[in-house]
Image (spheres, one colour):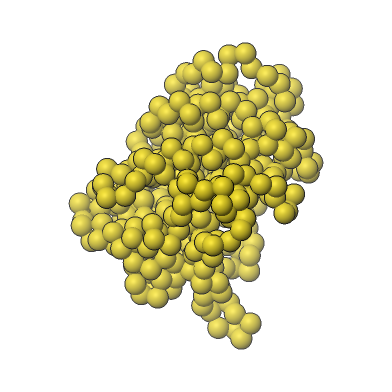
Amino acid sequence: MGGSANALVWLTLGASPVRAAELQDQWEAYGRVYISGEGRVIDFRQQGVTTSEGQSYAMIRALWMNDQPAFDRVWAWTVANLQGGDPAQLPAWRWGQREDGEWGVLDAQPAADADQLLLWSLLGAGRRWKDEAYRADAAGLLERFWTEEVAEVGGRLVVLPGPWARGADPVLVNPSYFLPFIWRDLARWDASRPWRRLLDDGYELLAECRGQTGLAAEWCSLDATTGQRVASANPAHDNFGFEALRVPWTLAAEVKWHREPRARRLLVPYLDLLESGSELHLPAVVGPDGKGRVEWEYPGMYGALLPAWGLRRPALARRVLAEKLEPIRAEHGWGDVDDYYGQNWIWFGLALWQLKERPV
């Protein structure tokens, strides 16, 4: 991985060859393939399960594309099936077919990434579609999120991955659940909670939860008393891969939407993951030492990194699109039709890179 003497010389997002109309078409194709008529997002790779993550992704995309019918359908299914009919409840993260053949909740624990995205999408829906019912749902969900999934660890506020992590030692946190662009919007809506402190503590923690090369770790362990990072019990937690690929997307959003200097600094290591003058190859899992842990690539990682490269290296972003993503373009989206996660992160990457309007 090469260095870049001009890594901190920031440009605006480069022009993308993707048109907004194409993102709309891709959203409609996603709806036909992955979202049932009732509003359930299906993960075909995982025996047809549905996750709160998948539901939240669909709601953000529907909001971004101004598709209120799809948004309402997905939210209604989520409330009925993952929240027990109560929109104020944190949703179960996993739903599918049980061993007895019946369909229902497989794991009732919530997942804080999805919970935040659901909350943010409801806040945005109330603003976009002028309906206070969405905000009423958001208010109840906000209360449960803050009470159950935000904790003080060693004097710092952190977002737990779920209520199950409260009281553990060490405390396990997921850097990709750090979503400051959501907290900024919540701070404008809810002045009763210390969102600015959560944001500042989160940036401090995100700077600590990185490997030697500066790439985000999949998971990070914190001493329950001091709040300092401690060695991970699982070495794979230190890798940059399927969980952490969301971090550079978040940082790019912070730069594009909020001009956050801390996000700019943290993005620098991602700029040189690919050398523009050679064959493009990015392993799907990168160790904390910067070396690939596997040889194969993951299209979703390329997608999630597009807006980060677009900030400083728009020519590289266009090349990645042309060489890595356009060749696998299909009627359903990109590449493996069973990979719903990759479909989402390619779309989110293109949307953040291309669209001027924010979803919320």
